[in-house]
Image 1 (cartoon, rainbow, N blue to C red):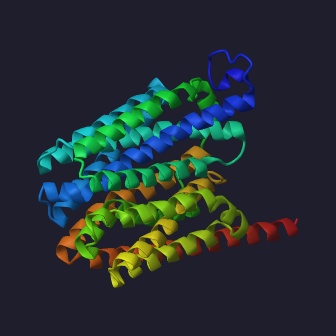
Image 2: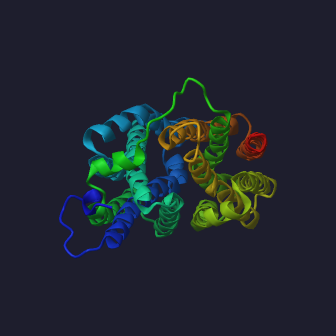
Image 3: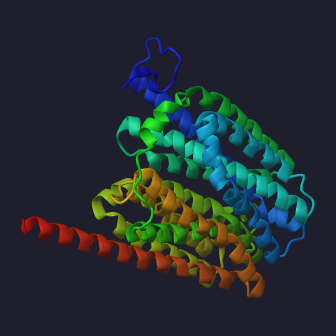
Length: 412
């Protein structure tokens, strides 16, 4: 590997392996920051709901702002990365993400917070495209799978954000104080990590871009992976945005424990993402995906059937473990597709999956308004069943293709 493939600056006596490691640490810091910022917002949703006197239906509509912003930026983000480079786009968007977090604390009505969260979503999407472009380039240089560890660091940031949020609430600190502290911490981490990002954009283009096949004929296994991801992200968004609200309005523990369900879910989600690869290697992706679906069903039903502190916490722990591996596995499997280039396959899967994240939280709010939050979460558990069904169908198709290929080789 050319020493200049990571950074155009002279490297002195630093070896290639050391530079790879430093770059990995730099990129990892941005995943950690992204998770920390998102979790900081999510950890104060119950407080914002009370401060703005929102019903579950109102909250559901407000939560629609973030995915709307993400959707509006979905195609523009790719253009910005290609035009200005992933590093510049990432630095601008992560700065915007932290600043918008602080502006959330100044929102005093429905319209204001919807607008602020819309920009929160646009920044999140730019980060997603630019940061994964960096990670993709580095993964190719490593020549082995390291993507799951990056997702694990996002979850670790999410776990840390939930814990910090609980501490600030317990200390009686305002949302503004909380979010300002998080923004300062993130600016420090960004300043340190930005020194080790990949700056030579030709490296990313060489390692992440391939000639793609025609999209005139969609590949069923890829569509199934997208639908599995849809179910996973539906439940993921539901846990992020509604777990603390569920604890505050249904479980009703001490104020200091309102975020316990969110923290428990993020904790097991973090653990699951760091250990997912070894389970996939041993039991194969479809089997792990079906088990994840079962964990989601079990966790949500346990939570709504027994709305008490211990059982609800355990329930969200199961949900967090269930959703932890779904998206990383779907992206990883899609990247090995024989029908499309890795970038095209992952784009298809992520686009379908993202719809679940977009639809989930607002739909739960509307269902809760029409019935109640327990029934809404019970309905959400059905997406775990869909994951099992689609994973089984995917496994059947891949097995059939393998058997047909084997018979064809034997017939030669």
